[in-house]
Amino acid sequence: MICSCPVVKERGSLEMKKTRLILLAILVMVSTVGFTQITLKNASQNNIRVYSTDGMQSVNVPMGTTVSVPFLKEANGVTVCRISHSAYKPGSSFIWTSDGEFTLTVKNGQAVFSNTKQKPGQAIVPGAETGKRARNLKVIFPGQSEPEKIVKGDVPKDWFTTTTFTVQNLCTITIIGYSDPFLGMCLKAKQVTSKRITAPTGNLQAAFGYDLDADSIATGKNRKWAVLDKAIPEGMDTLKIYNENLVLANTGIKVTKIFKNRTSLGYLIVNDEFSYGKKKVKTISPGSTQKVDFYLGWNVMAVQYKDENGYPKQAVLLFLVTDKAGVVNLTQKSGKGDSISESKLEIK
Image 1 (tube, rainbow, N blue to C red):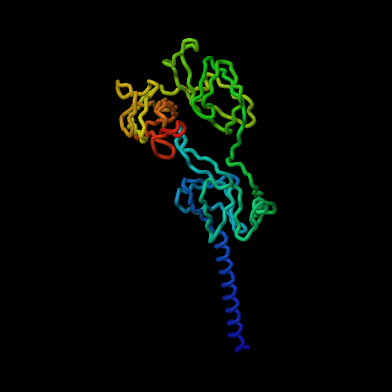
Image 2 (cartoon, helix red, strand yellow):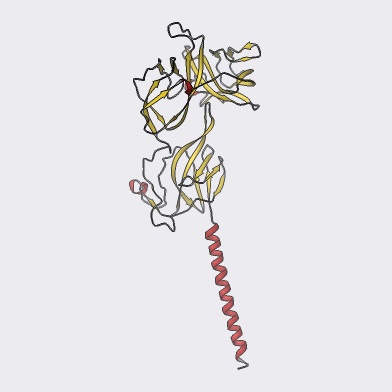
């Protein structure tokens, strides 16, 4: 009996050691499963924002960086997320534009997003079939009985939808559209467009012009500029524009800023609102830098210049100016050279 005691203790000790090892292994496994996160590499040419599929969580991923995204889950070698990219919009500074939902391959715990133009909703799974069957892939995450999302082809590019409508001018004056989607539109009071316009839903800002003089005697000398600020809901049939929807631009407090022309063209400023001190600024030399008094808030600048054929062209630029120090730049959206389309000019 005495000799058996050490044997019992040794066996008990071994069993306890095995139990400890098993518990430790389980804890390590639980720790690994609970805290392993997917990192996302932004290999695109824009700063992006990654959202959970329900849109409730998001993480910013600057261009060229890799960031850990806690809410992303991996299933069958892929992860599903929504992505938006930051882009400059004249008059609104940088805005976030949705690119849709993406199914990204996960390799060694990392997913890579490389192109905002790639088709949303397209699954890339190593060894899987391509084409229709791959686009209809059902992604089921652990613990879910139903698919969280059925990924199909031809997913809309943006989260918002578009709607098609006519425009009715219920202002007391004739209004002229100077920016998309109203560029070239001109309506007298109570007039309705003969064509229908398609625009994205959501909040919309656009540049408009009107003349203080009656149409019969108007010369353009007393033309004023305004910004339409209007909500565009789904299913809207007619966009009704009232006087109160037009926010007067080029008014109020002025602030002096450095204005830099980063293009190779010279410009004639058509409207008279811009100045420096008592001097009205009427021309902008190619590649020049000068001081200009801008208005805090919305500014509309109409400029004329020669195109590649030597004919005059006009561009109406809508932009926002704040009271912070900085340079106001006149640039072209893409490309270089002496030929610039009016749609390619921007102020930022």
